[in-house]
Length: 403
Image (cartoon, rainbow, N blue to C red; front, side, top):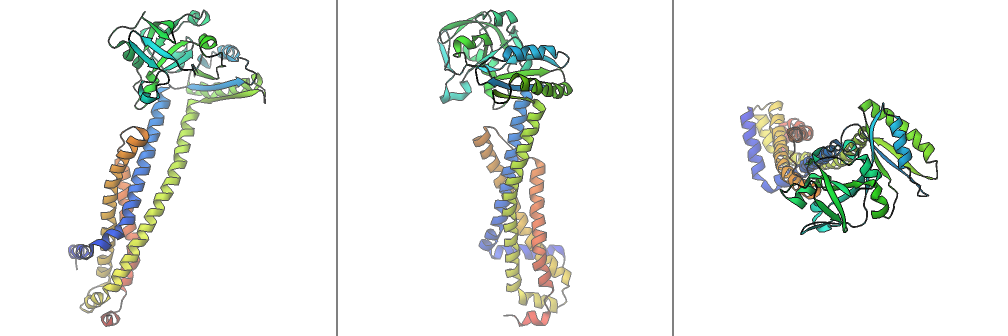
């Protein structure tokens, strides 16, 4: 019997018991679909995280530091970073107005508490003249805040690219005045839009001098800072130096501090996603294993049902390898058909999961698709081999006696 005949017999056997074949494939379908959806969603999450981290700029160090007694450490930290000029090229507070701020220009009004439409929710940030440098913003129009703006607490602001469009449409915003909770602020600059997918809030900022923390933020201490290192190597060295300095500035039990480079953030994110992938992959793997056992169980039942047929074929001269091929092809066909259906469901599920969980469109890549199909085929061979060998080992005389 050649392969063509074996395929025809396998198809005939599968179609003769459609419901049983479908139920047999169900475990494979669920397992493959789960693998495709889980792996693709994790890859989408990883892509989203990397886009966010990269948009923040390279060689960035995120510093968090505060004292329980409320003492401001920003000036001490600023002066120390200036002393490391061979490693650090900039530092800025990364504060935020926590109270609700109503932003107005002409007839347009927006709120920092616009939870009903989060894509239009504006953030009023506190920083200095190095805010753009440290947070990877580029001036499109006008200028950055100046040191004098910060020191003299001038009522000036720099707008994120999307905020400028929201408030001014096609009008040039430079030298125009907006109000924040009724306080006028003159627009002196506009940042270019970063246009990072699913992170519109990065362009929804209004930057004002951090010295307004006293009057607009109930003088709450600023706890977050961004430091820009001159290189990747300098970032690692500066992080170590900053940790050492902060341990002296904020002794144990008097506050909290931490300095983490952007590379460490990437490593932490990747490690978390790897752990998540292992757990979810294990769950999907168990489903595939159960599906494979189901395939083997049904093939053993099939061998029992077709014992007499096997005996007749062996009696007229069929070789063991042709019997093995027939049943192995049938098992592989069940797994491959189940795998293809699982991949299709996985594609649809990935699109739904990406939109629902990450607000982005995700497509499984070719490698995941080929891997899923390869696993399906491998399961067919692995779990179909024993029933096929068992069938080929039946003695013709014994098989012909079977009812």
